[in-house]
Length: 105
Length: 181
Image (cartoon, rainbow over all chains, first blue to last red; front, side):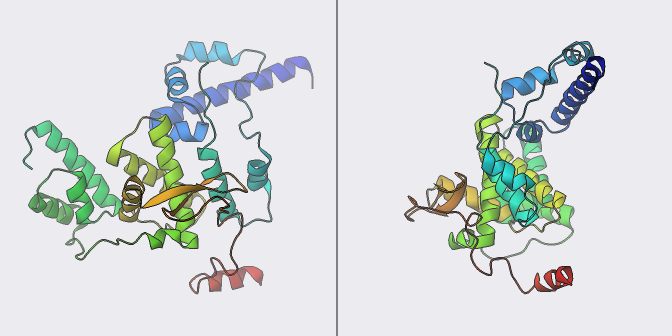
């Protein structure tokens, strides 16, 4: 992939992520915090971003969302097809709820 | 108790309406709002179109300890815990929000709700009263609902170690048979 292409892909993803997060937070703040795995402060900050700020943030060369589940067990639960899907997602959700949330340093 | 403020009363009516829509029993409404029994009865009939069911609420902690209810209870409590710890939601508000998240989760995955709102509310109260506690599974590290007097040092949850025949109810059987054919 050419570098310019890569950067435009990153920008697209960043933009989708930020806009989706904002929309989720606006519709159901607490539920969105759970789904995004973010703390109150981060939710506040994301919710207050103006469209201009979102565009500028999205245009960075880095991805803004990061991999949440750096945990073998959780990964296995979410990706293993042999397990009963209903039970596996419930198990994963129970475990994910106790994972630390993304917070401002 | 008589309500002093009309704004307060309005808010409580809203909470009560929401609870009734979610299927709450009258006893729960009485405990969570300061509205009089007559008003709640009237509200219930208006929202549901029928009189509220009579009789006592389920009061046993055992129900939450059997396999399927335990998983559903633990799932509900994980939402509830998150809301209290991270989102600053309190009281009955947390129960309502967590219950909505629970329903949403099940609906998304095409499962039936096992926990009713009244059961969920009772569960929160049992945990507050220390009749139930959380036990950490030694395999997955998740927090699961357990009896207050259980020894839980070597606790393994029902999802890490699924008991034989778990979830194979008579109601589910025809669907399973269809899937294997």
